[in-house]
Structures are given as structure tokens and as C-alpha cells.
Image (cartoon, one colour):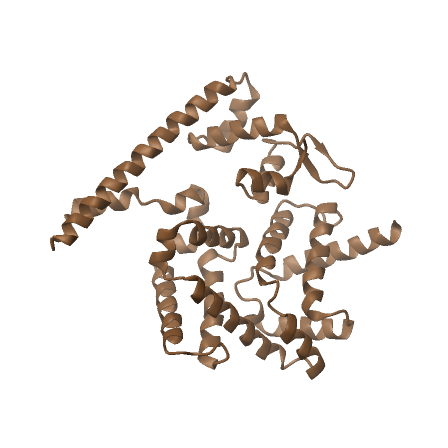
Length: 344
């Protein structure tokens, strides 16, 4: 059985960008490429990926992993035994954290201020972000490194919840301003890195304790999304006529959750220096135009007015990680895809 890079990424819990990086540095080369140029991975690739991830979990750098795999390789059962031992150590750490938290809870229930050493020991074991980000990535994640970002996020979440509690509508001007601030904070907190955004969303979805502490409930997320759509439609209304706005109001925002993944994939392709003519990039450009036309329609004049709005109104792109370099890349890939279609 052969898996595409997207299928392998989904099945093994990695990002497509990571697999592309492994390919670029020669750590994991796909066994074959399809007639359309897509990476395809076979059983031997999957076994090698298992070894790569096992060695990575044991703390080896990618360079060291490459060196280790270039020589005689340990039998797979031995690799798995080392993984089991590493997991046993992780379970021991989790049990230690649980014990420390129970001790803190007992002290608090008894009305006693926790011992400073207990607090510090507990904080030392609370390394949630390290499950989703490498050490190098954490150094570039503002949410983790900038001491002002997290307090500002918490203040914004509280302001939005307060607006909801007093019965604010998503069409209220103050609610829309909060939604636009939310998008600006996304850009600031992630360093405008779409891959970081996807992982932060995963943390909020998969870690109940994080969601509970952050206050970002599903209801709050829906409120922000709806207020954001309303705010951006109000901006578009300054550029589009009534007929165009009718279509926008019916369709804009419906595919909101499809954009971050696509943007992250295109950003990864751009950073990996894949040419716009590459079939993978062309396919992503076609998907881009499909999502764009879903709300913009097919009229070139409407497209021009929408692009003008995007060019003139920063709030239409805030938090999206879309910049001029990415747009130029998509345009070039789209033009190449059209030429390819005409030649077939």
C-alpha cells in the first residue's frame, strides 16, 4: 500500500510540513512519486519513519538521527524496547506531576498557602507546549516567549465573555472590534506562523485542562467567528455593490476552517522552495481559487474589487499569515495550473 504525504501525515500525527522537511534534508525520501509528481510512501518508508520518530523522542537531533540511520541499524524490536523504556519514564513523570498537584490541592483545601518549593516543582513538570512544539520552535513562538502576550489574551477572552454575558450581538460594533482584536492577537501570538496556529488550535481541542483554564469555550469561539464575519462583511460593503454583497453575505465565512490548513500547506511549499509549476503547488492553488470563488463568484470585476479591498484593508487579512509573497506564489501557481490544463 502506498500513502500520499497528506495521508501519512494524518495517520502518524505529523504535519505535511515536517514530512516535506524530512524529504528535503534526505532523512525520509518517498519511495516513489506518482505520475502527477506526488510523494508516495511504502512500508519501508513507514518503518524508517518509526525509527526516526523513536530516535527523536529519545532526544536525538535530526542530524544525529541521519547519522544513526546511515550506518548499521538496530533491529526494530530493540528500537521499540527503547521506546517502551522512554514511555515508562514519561509515565513516571506524569505520576510525579499528579502527586504534586494533589499535594497542592490538599494544602489549598486546608486553607494553607502552598510551599514555594512545591509551586516551583509543579511548574517544572508542566510542560504542555513541549508535546506540540520542538525546543527550537518554542523559541520563536511569541505566546511562549513574550511575557505580554498571554496576559493580553486572557484580558481579551474576559472582555469577549463579558460582552456575551451582557447579551451583545455579533452585529454590535464593540463585538466586531473585539473579533478584529482577536485576529490581531492570533497573528501576534503565533508570529504569523500558520503551522503554529493549527497546533495551538489542536492544544485547545485535545487538552481539556487548557481549554478550561483559557476560557476559550466552543460558545466563545462561535461568537468570535460570527462577529468576525460580520465585521469583515461591513468592510467589504465599502467596495462592493448590493448584488455582490448579497452573495458575500450568503457565502463568506462558510469555509472559514478550510483556509488555515491550506495556507499552512502553501507556506510550507514556499519555504521548501517548491516551484509554482510543481503539481502539488498547482493543486493547492486550484483549491485556493475554489474557496475564493465560493464566496466571490466568477465575475472578474468582482474579483478585482475584492482584491482591492484586501489590499487596502489590513483587518481583512489580520491573523491569516497571508502576505504579498504568498499571494504572488499562489498567483504564479494558478497561472501555471491554467496553462497545464490548456495543454492537456
